[in-house]
Image (cartoon, rainbow, N blue to C red; front, side):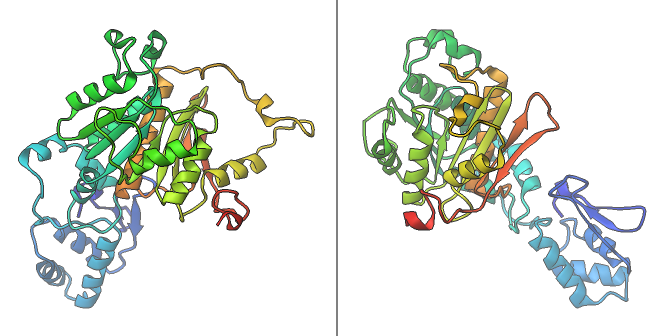
Length: 373
């Protein structure tokens, strides 16, 4: 049994696995009493046949076939790993990720032989990050620290004094320097095992997004090279950028994630072509759900504050960047299995008010619907 999912017996004699963490914990009735013997025997010191023998020794009435099936069910549910599986990384990598891998193992409910499979998936990944400001900087730091193999950064801006309240990649000495140059240097210093490249460039239309996804375009501090497994969107301009990214990722079959903040609301989204709704589907679904009580013909944007720059601080940028990296790692590893076509987040005014949006693909969607195919 995974150590993070250590089982215990309840007062009723049931077997509880994964404690009481919602989404992980499970409680199993044990009327005959041998299931508890089984999970105790699965402590990593016995081979499968020896586990069956131990259960039948302690509970002679247990059927061997039932015990083997219970073992298979526990493995399929993600509560078991092979304790004899070799760790397929160097001692240095093992030490660097010695805290992160157990967390991935804790959240992972897919059947795997080794807890390192998810970490190895990160190491094989290539990620394109558009925007390295507050949200993007935090997200890029998290992805590089977590061991994503290749990260390519794209941003057109230079560092300004007003950035420093929420963009921890940069220092006062970076003011006037291109953000990409400063970010690449900082991230390479953070993890030399990750290949970090960047280019100073702005996406001004769908063609620019398509070019970035394909790895073409302006030369920078190492070309991206294409072949990305994920696009991470942390830029908020031009205003149509999300629509362009959504359309080009649909055409390329490329998963993407985005995040941001609007005042005290912090959210991230997960989009996988062919699975769940796309960004346009969620946008249309939310427009139908909300009741802004506007007069007929009124632009819905009047119901939201509009300022030259989105108010933010290190907290809102850090939370959105953290959620963005979490969404990215979910797509890259499957841990945890976040549903595509969804947004999630929180309201800082009321922490008990989570943001959850999920909509199916809409047949009438202009981007992924039947008419657009």
